Length: 161
Image 1 (cartoon, rainbow, N blue to C red):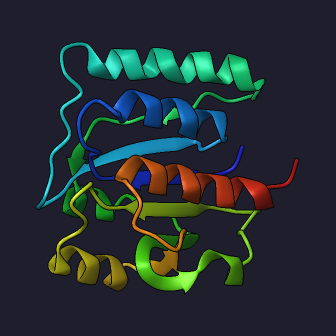
Image 2: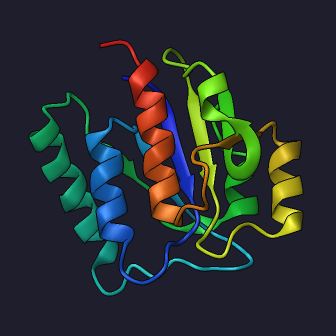
């Protein structure tokens, strides 16, 4: 199993379920929802349990060997010290194009995606201090959940079979 973590700020509305399902299908090993200055997660009643069920269903559908670990939402600063080592990428429309980066494929990789309103300047600076490299995943602005899935698909494309 690879150590791939999607660290994601909240999307708009009720798109969290879709996000969990797609990250799990793409083989992300850990989903860490993060509360940010511009958005806080709200999975609703029974939300975390539902996300665990969705991760299990996605495991079966995608015929993967490991179920994605779904962690409780926490502030970005609180999870910073617990992030695994490895390649770190920050989804950023101003970053270097993803096509110029070879997907890490082997070893730990972490994707940081801001909430739907984007990371605050202080959070972007905080991420840079943690070694997150800005990477552009599209020629347009993406929703939080789309950016997270685009990053996971980019990573998954370089992952060994």
